[in-house]
Image (cartoon, rainbow, N blue to C red; front, side, top):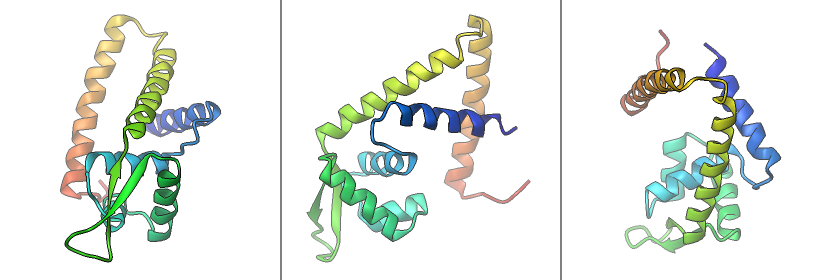
Length: 141
């Protein structure tokens, strides 16, 4: 059962070796900002359950790299709304290409029918994991 975790960890190490400057936390924060235009840092922290100081450091880094910009909130003058830049889209594409390349390598030993069956099962498991996340049902079974 731990194979998914191990594959994910190997993918992270593969991406680090490619030296794109991203780690999983930074990727997650950028993903949340890209999909929630105008979200605040507090909002990002709530979605990801990450520490405020960590979110602040990551957002500052993303701004410094030109991947995110912030605007003062109209409703709360103390808060800033976060938006991704066009550069963030190209970085996302680079990450997706890297992941696709990695998956092609690890699936290369599977026949077409094995790959199709595996991907169908994986999609089913993914949908269930997404439902659990949306329902906030994290109790142990």
